Image (cartoon, rainbow, N blue to C red; front, side, top):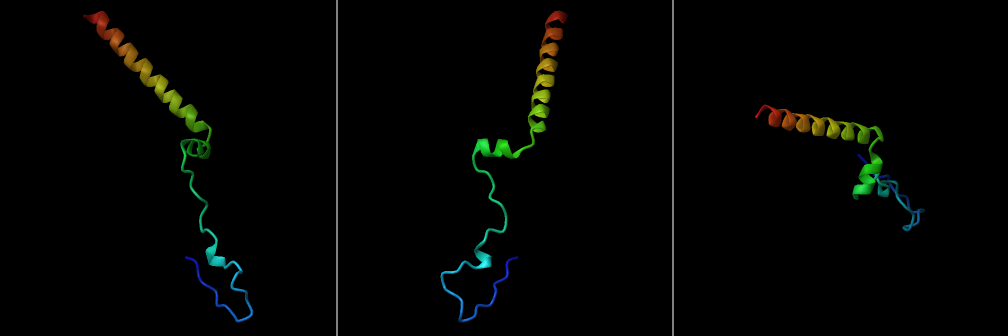
Length: 68
């Protein structure tokens, strides 16, 4: 929680106060920014899962067609 500091009469009104600074880094808002924020291994895991599911359902349909 940001606390305000007491101002004295000697400070300029144009000076930047400490509580004006952002408390947290800004979050990415675009797809590219979100993808760059993730670790690179995330894409390896997701692509591996995709390949496993594709091969599972492909083999499942192949087995089903050979049985009938």
